[in-house]
Length: 347
Image (cartoon, rainbow, N blue to C red):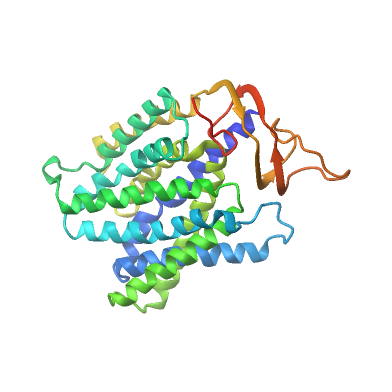
């Protein structure tokens, strides 16, 4: 059980590491590629890369496919992934980079609040404390100069971008039981094509083949694999907890920047890292155990019959993990759990 509980945390950390390396590497590529086209190439690299992985993979996948039933969340995921970068770029044009960097950390809070208020995800006191520490850590990391912070129309646009990403994280969470490769492909091509259309419309384009291929490869690793691991984590941890672990991404990027750009190690980085460790520890050791009721539900996802939640019967011979439409009967029991898709109940 410990290994099973550790797996989603590992996935969340891998997602953060994959995404964290994108900032310093993308900074190098931005010397040639405009920001709007860069966003498009990163998303398209994710879609193309995961499509290639899907072709190489086994055809008899155990994962459940996205259906028309999930269409609202799928559309929301893609549209919000297009809107958020646009709002962020508009905000950057009207405020300082330091101000935008500081406000961008509101995504962690936005994800948690939306998970609680709209999607009814349970967040305990220890988890709120963990989110507070992690947010504080992120603020310290991005706060270079207190005089650079200002509240303006640009700030509101950056906050709007964070709200979009927070809602997008929760939409993705509602799809997390489905095939993660399929989700990344849809997200990659949908958001990538949308951003590319915008890049063409504003005439922000580069035709440097080496830089374009490099951006696509970076998109596969930093967006494709990152989102894949993120979705795997969300299945068990929910949106708020996954977002908490994912907050280590800035530290990965900053550490890599120290190496690539020979930036000096700062006191604020060390302090922020220590606070982040405290927050991550509180998130990891949180326990949630009480008597709860599962209402009857019918859905389709990858599962096995050794988790005390899937007790339906099959024809003889079907063992191990598999996916199909199945019904959960109404059940009341008591055990430790996270806010996965099977544990969306009131408290």
